Length: 582
Image 1 (tube, rainbow, N blue to C red):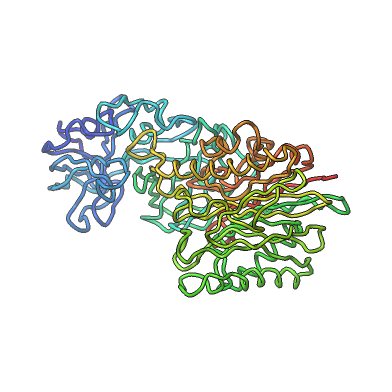
Image 2: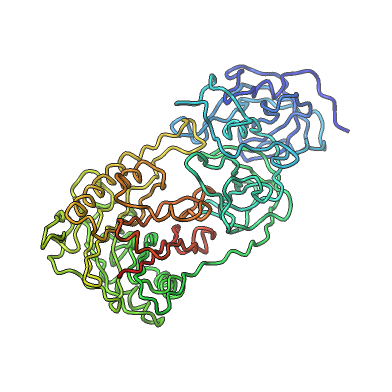
């Protein structure tokens, strides 16, 4: 039988309906609870006498000096100091965790049953499905309104340190490099936009607060893919770290395959079409021969050998971390040869070597944007001097038509907008007697942005301003091309590292000069990347009016982002546009 607890300080009073304890800094005595989960640096405990307010958590972390000596099921009385600590330190963007430190622990009895976990989802507490936080404008503070019914940030905070249960957990974020899995309960039945493959698609006003991360701190988690689902309830304790609320399961979690498979492009057959693909190949080098073979297989058997492939993250010939040289001719040639070995067509390549260490990315890799183009497709490069790393390409006028002064050329490569970032590379082809301009981009990463569930709401997007500047440079160039010839065929494509509804994309869509083809797809198909379980668009193909009217198909080939870190080739998907050009 469970031992009755005396009247003492209660966990829910310490937690309060807030992100900060109303008792922070105070010494508390004989806080009662049952030990639910052990860690190497402390333990979680939970009250057996909850209050009637779901906004006040009934669980709390007890920090110990070294490995705790208590056991799961021990009824304990804890005395110590209430503290708020941000995982990783106050210099991070993390929310704080309410805990008791400098503790003395008295074990009252052992072998007690654990409090029943709170069900999150149907039959329990329903998580918010749209709003993460709409009460703050800056740092989350003790004065911030606390609304767990509406705000995902507050919802999970109200269960900090408690045991919770997710029924019918659906994988929306496959196993990542940190062995984390992102799930949503009830097979995603209450998600606003669920993709056909089982992903949670973001929208401008919805970054899916119903997601929650499973962390492998206490037990080893399996490698799983998007669309897989748990065969039994997932039970664990609510924790926070690395910008996310997490469940720490303490028993093995088993999943059933959802049958994820790779998409294959539509076979054009004998149709007279021009097929253009965009693909970030994630730090591609010839140092891993199996990746060369895999990319060739994807080009031939999944993409069905498009006429043009715009590539990002092509490394130099010796790859990272080697620091010698920036040439990438051998990298391109390895892809070309591997495609031919699989029975594919012969490609040519378009490349401009960057200045060493000048374009960001992995050290020694000298990643750059470039092109492959089929030599049998009727595409020819317009004759002009070949550009270099630092000379800006200009626009000449010949017989009333725009011509590049360099082909290929880099657009304003010394502009500070492209400091430690990839420079846009523009190429001019002739196709059926008319020019076709492609601008291949890889804008700066979102890596410095604050987390969605961080201590600042709404999160500060520290990297966005640079992408806005980069987008403006590209837009100005496109505008200049179209000013010479409003019917010019212009394509802006690549890894723009931002969403279709973001400010950088708004710049590129100014005056309707360019149309983002992803916006022609149903909402549930709009993703090229999955981050923390959010399916989102980072890669784009944008076209001028003359090409929009010639568009016959646009598709995103979902072949990577749903797969676990061990299986996928890249973290990006392939975008593929087909044009019937007269």
